[in-house]
Length: 260
Image (cartoon, rainbow, N blue to C red; front, side):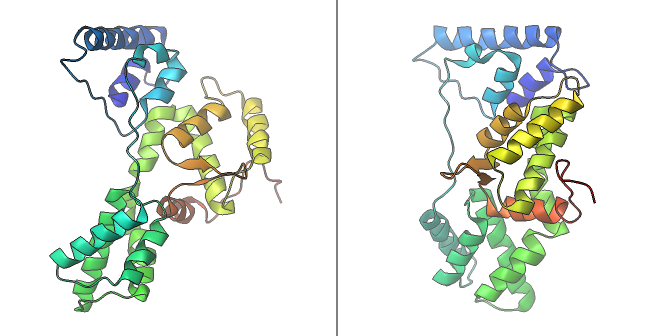
């Protein structure tokens, strides 16, 4: 659904156009009208890999979705994730001791079901190659570093980049890339750094580029970053943070840091 609305709103340069906004407004108005007319008899469920709310806010069409209530699919807690790993290990006739399951959850930090299952698949395949049935903490470390974060693991995580390109477009994606890479390399993003980025990207004056505030809103809404009690922004997922750092952090030089 958000992908469809995004295609309606934006032209080939990823700019929201008056015509696109009119088409999206007409579609959402039709959806809203039918939702109201058939309320109690028909349930309309909208889903997507990117958030609808930030997109509608960009276009000034938030009111068209106010008949819908957001349902946030939370990640599993550690107990649920560890229980799933235990069930999977029993099914595939391998042994994952409690400390191994806890180590897997700790590395993921945010136990998204797909990531839990992906980690198990790679552990299972590793044990088959080793002709063993029981995993150790050393196996967890090796598989995480050489499988989850390797080039082979990139296909499973590259959609996180694609989502940002879809929702933020050609002008907004480089801003998100800079912010996420800075956060991955430095472990956090504080308000002072956000202010420096605001000054830098305002000076660039790139036509159609979203503001830092809008980009951060998307990164928070779609689960990339989370604001901490101390006011800093940090990655929600340990896996995504480590993968992002490996992919972009090697020769990273922030645009707001002095050049040598």
